[in-house]
Length: 190
Length: 190
Picture 1 (cartoon, chains in turn orange, red):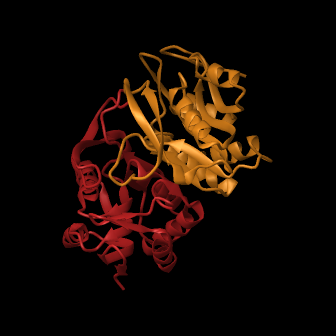
Picture 2 (cartoon, each protein chain N blue to C red):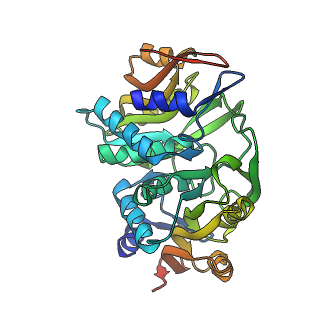
C-alpha cells in the first residue's frame, strides 16, 4: 500500500534493536484518515469472503479493527491481555509472548463472542515474530470458527512471523512488508 | 441517548458489586454501528468547539475514540498503561487507580503528541469513581493544552466521578447516566 509506505518513510523512525517507531500515526497518536484508507485496503484484499467478525488484541489493534470493521459491516471482538473482574464466565485462553514488553501474558476471549458459525478476519498493527497473531489463531481454532485470513498493517519481513503463518496455509495480507532495516534506511518488499 | 439506553436495558447485565457488563456491544465485542451513532452524538454535543485532538486511555476507549474522531476529523491520542520499550523520550505521566482491576498503574503519554496549542476532547467508555478521567485531565493540565470537555458513554451516576469532574467546571457529557442499579433493574437519569 503505497500511501502507507510513504508515511512510514516520512514519519517512522528506527531505533536500536530493530524497533520501528510509528507512534506519530499508528499506535500512540492515530491518524484516522490514514487508518480509514487502511480499512478500505483490507476490505479490498479480503472482499468476497463471508466474514462475520473481526478479531484483534488489545491495545493498538483495536482502533484499526474498529475503523476497518465499518467497511466489512461486522462487529469487532478484542482479546484481552489479563484476567479482569468483569470477565467472568467461560473464556478461551492462550499465552502470548510480547516482543516489545519482554514478557508472557495470558490472553482471553469470552466464549460468547466467537463460535463455530463465525468466519473470522484477524487484524493487528504489527507482525514480527508472530506471537500475538499465533495467539489469536489458537483462540479461533479453540472456538471452532473458520479463519478467513489475517490483515496486518506493518510486517517485519526479516523476522519469522510472516513465514510461519503463511506456511500454516493462512491467507496473510500485510500492507507494508519491511525486508530490512538499518539505523538509516528501510527496504520494503515489492 | 435513547438508542444507547435501550441497548443497555436489552443487552447489559448487572453483576454483584455494582458491575454493569456491556461486553456484548461496547467493551469486549463492539457493535460498530452503535458506536458510530455514539460518535455522531458526541459530535452533536461538542459541536462548534475548536477541538484538535481526542485523548483516551487504553484499552476499551480506543475504538470508541477512533470512530468518534471521524466526525471531528482530528487525530486520536491514547494514554498507555505501562512503560513500554517502544516509548522512549519525554513523557507526561500520572497514576490511575483501576476500579475493575483493583490496582494502581502508571499512565503515560508522549509529550510529542499533546502541547499548549491543542484543544482536547476526552473520550472514554465508562465513568465511575473518575480515576481514569482524572488521570487524563492531569495529563492535559501538564501539557498546557486546553480541555474542551469529556465525552463518556456510560456514567455510573451513583458513584462520585461525575460530580467531582462537573465540580471542576469541566464540561462532561455522558450519553447514559445510571442513577441506581440493583440485581434486577437499572434507573437512568432523565
